[in-house]
Image: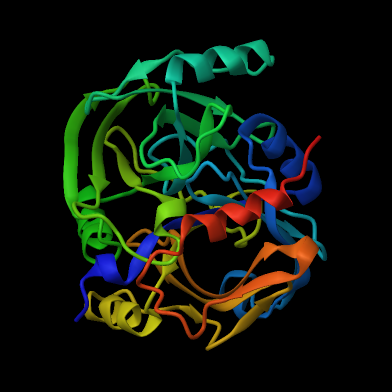
Length: 349
């Protein structure tokens, strides 16, 4: 079986359920530099009925990236039902995606910049593994953590890039470590600590930070860059399921998505470790200006993990340049100048 570094190539995006996708995109574009819409697509989520009450739901989605590197945001809105907010404000250690980790060129300067812009930010903390970071919430109470970034795709004036990882609340951290090591390939335990964490709030937590020990290949690996997974278990009280009684697509962080080079090898890996696909779009799925295959599995607590193999990607839509990847060896990184062409799709204020 192929090793996981030849099957996956990084975090492609994290899904963010919102009530108004255009409004959310404008906010993320202004403050986070997520200003390149790879696609804007309105259609029906026909494959997701296991997670949308057994009914096909209509939706509008925007995939936005930051050309400096890192994963993107898939901003997702129901168009045929009123999205349902969580019954409680999710806290670190609740089951599901607790927060998004975004890379910064300079944590202190990013912190000062957000304060000048009038955003409420936390203090700057030093993690048990020795990096500096701080948190802020968007207007919809989604938590973002800015940390020292590595693996930049392009240089620029902006202080931050895209997604460099995720914080995930779990109920049994040892069991979850096995999943993210065996299936996702984040095999290196960087830190494993237990105690009171002022950064996470009141209570006692066990925290494990995972990263891949080897560099990943793949068409988009240089753009997506390195990533980390922080698992958080509350030891004072059982974590609550963030999406209990709600649908995929309702407000919050709905899934963590990885870019895939070989979906067949990945499916074999998921089956081998007891985490089979729960959704599979088949060989091709059209997202308007982009196309590919997507699948889902669940981590041990039911957090949704998406996998996408890209077949078509808009590079310079103005000039009709769409990249066809179906006949390309997707284990090899694309030249920087090709993906760099997406900067011409940037939307400005």
